[in-house]
Length: 144
Image 1 (cartoon, helix red, strand yellow):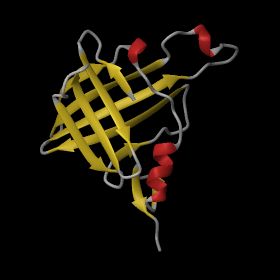
Image 2 (cartoon, helix red, strand yellow):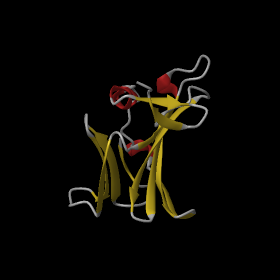
Image 3 (spheres, one colour):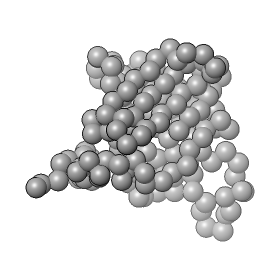
Image 4 (tube, helix red, strand yellow):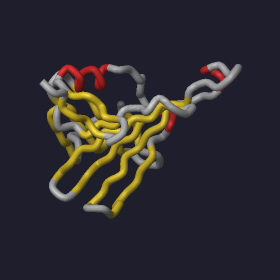
């Protein structure tokens, strides 16, 4: 996912491959101000819970005493509504935490959000031998 922060020249991007996930934040076309990378196994990823009219997922990256929670989603068509009836269905943002205190919360400019929901990240976590425990709301290792 990627987006421009509302009212700002800053962009955020989250991407992953079969081993790592990366968070980047900064001005477009410049070296990012902040880049964090973690293994997929360690990635704090909260998949969509399959309820509601919006698909929402979150990944959290950690850096010392800080956590950067990136949320992304899109509003699904409802009833007779067509996808084209509502422009800019995608949404997202990032919140930064220091300990248990939120220190910033920024929303994406909805028109700039690039996000296509799929199961690739979920399947990548499963390929590592992990399964999502929807009661505990965390990834757990499958027993041998």
